[in-house]
Length: 358
Image (cartoon, rainbow, N blue to C red; front, side, top):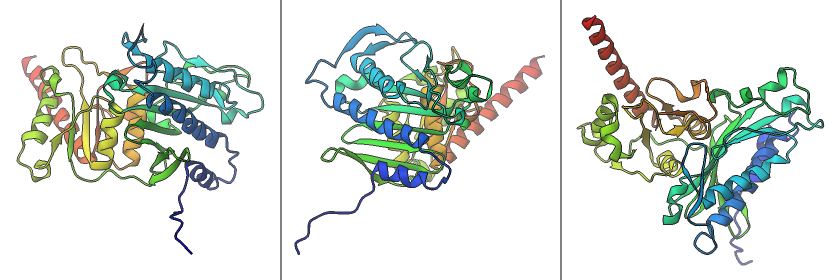
């Protein structure tokens, strides 16, 4: 018989079903959330791929809560994500980087309290690059609604405390990258798995199972134009890996796209470290804890890496605001720990100097 060319493959749908079978008491509520993320991403990618052909490029003329000008695709992707999850019985609330406040959703009485979740997302990370056809992405984070246990009735909406949970309590996190191909990468705390969208059949196919960050620092990703705004340990670390004599860094290249998803995705597959330290003058970071840093940190740790502010593990931070920003370094564990060591030594030296003066 002639070779049909058919090869066996595993889809996102079948993979989720297989994982669900590992939990005999599961009723598929959480699995449905992951499936809907896949559906939403297919709609977004269809819009991204039409950029330049229909009126979705350029600025919307509005600003988000951070005062940033919104691209048209920002608004469109945000609407798609909200429409995808608003009707789901298991969703108690949503929060988007593009919206000022949380979006409560009335709980459905047909769902047990323990099965309510909240979802946070950056609908289109890197959207400032969209007009230049640079890879962009969607980042998502899922938490169990903790207000289920605090006396709310099943038909009452979520509370702010549902969203202000540390990253280590995430039930799932992931991103979709819209580039030369569309790829969905996620974790539920049991490894990191990647699925590539096959446009011919419209299905996500398992292409990268159990991703582990290679133990090499091939890429250094940072906005080096901000070098003079960094504090001393950040400059020390950047100089050490870029110009140092250690053999590990002899083949290191500077690679910075300016789309967090794209920079992290490359380093996840190739090995490397991404950093966006605090501005020395303000002491503040740029990236959002709940929508960007926490979900990416969960992925990094599940892949054998680490994410830190330099002084605190990202996943341990207790959020105080829906749109809180933090500094971040994420990637190979060895490099992140080296950065933490440099920060600790710097802080100790500063503290010693202060004590000497007093």
